[in-house]
Length: 245
Image (cartoon, rainbow, N blue to C red; front, side):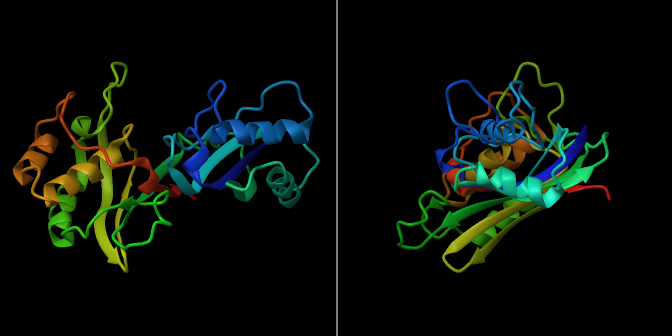
């Protein structure tokens, strides 16, 4: 039995998120089905992701691992998996790793991009939040506030069983790139919906619909029932996951 690490790219438009669910299409479910088709097994081969992505969220660098007894080499296994996957999900790389590697628990930094589109084309509606040009300077005054270690309870979906709502953010920056205004953020971990809540509330604040000191107070005085704006899912991309070499 060998453990394999894989990097996955997917268009989340037609997926109900990463996590396997009964009777709906998910990324985890599709990859596991591809493994069953290769292995001809009647038992589930669990694929463990670095984290969950929501319905409609995309990934260019999701990382996962699974255990499999196979004579296929890494390149052959990658090609075999891709032959059984749909066009909106692709294995970008695969490598054999040590048995103690874990895609989720060994991750040290996760990188996300949130994409806003300010142009006239209708072709980006499944890959961006379409809105008028935001005030990037004002957005970056808000973004710098989230860098560092904070309790992000105000910006995460409340869960009774979640004991730790602290995250360390290493980068948070808005950049204008042609007709796109993109938010780049990296951290050691993220709460459920956290990036979307941050983006939505920053956009709302930059438009003058939410006070800037109100945004800052949500970081300084965390609330489990904070009234924050959630950005739509289609603008969010999990770009990369870092591990210690």
